[in-house]
Length: 491
Image (tube, rainbow, N blue to C red):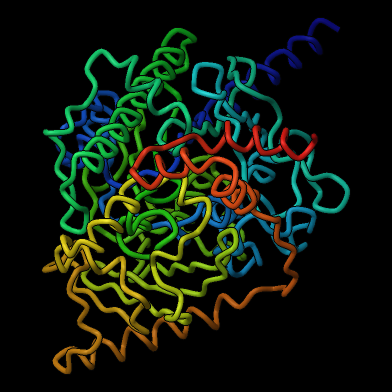
């Protein structure tokens, strides 16, 4: 009997050691962020914790999301497959429609491999529990895709007994929200608006500069949150076996950013820190898609990449991606259709609905883009530069072609230049190939009604003074106004 217990004990110890050989993985997902970090060269902002991650890990300079809006982008990453293929490309749609049986969320595969999947963290703003995917799901529980739709095992805390664990933590501060002024007011060193450096397509106006400075205040706030997570790993003795990934879920919420397929909407920060040296260069310039991050997490965990995944492990010696393919479709009341591919040198955008202008007066964005309101006024006054006027044209070009080496801000559209006809034709054909390859598995379309539309119309009628403040570039608080609107409807 003693011999039997000894053998069982040795087996259990061996099993525990084997299990702990798998690394813990933390995926930090900042909302609405472009390459606006100190380690990427953004002036005026201080991000010491992300700087350290980049210095000791690998920084990727050409990582692109597959959609510039949160829910389609997150849907693609949750499955490791382009959102078009899984019919999750329309924002806040199909929330009661099960994922096609041929696909699985990657957390289900991690669970099957013995990982504890944790959602959120107790130390970050609003606990970081956002999921926001366009298929039927529940935050916690098992997954079979038919009767059970749970994505994670637990909330907010990773402990030694959870090892190996995977934690996905959302950093909400950089998302437009009613907390921006509070974060700035509580900052020991708020970013100086006079120190910020903005792209050429943004107006140099005091309100626009202050708005940019507030955004960078949020970036500094979440950098501090990342420091708290690293501190927790150290205190719990798990720092030496935990890989930490940092990304944005889509680009910054500003002109040409979130919602658009220009560079500020698609290009995201991506940093991988590992206590064990990662192969290759410390700064990588090759093209990476956000769905590749999903495949890389599975690769870190020693899990074979399913055939249905369109993402590829980025530290595999065979990794090579010539293009990333992005799609923009429904966002609230704006039913768009835009497709784009990006290489190291070229960007091609096809606007299938050119009659819809960039500045489509979408209700949600009216609340959250002070620069748009200011620049509309400046346009009327004839005070915008040609680069700044591009966003406010009455329609979009049918095609856009940019040389990213010579024109990183994508201001000079070469699509109508005969000199680049061959490149245009090649990019056009490549995009059509992706269109066909990513044909959705279903045409089910069940969108949610966008509440901001109702609040915006109510605001104009019932609160004209606050509406005028909005037109003057003041963020008047969508969340609080939504609560007021709902109360008014109950009377």
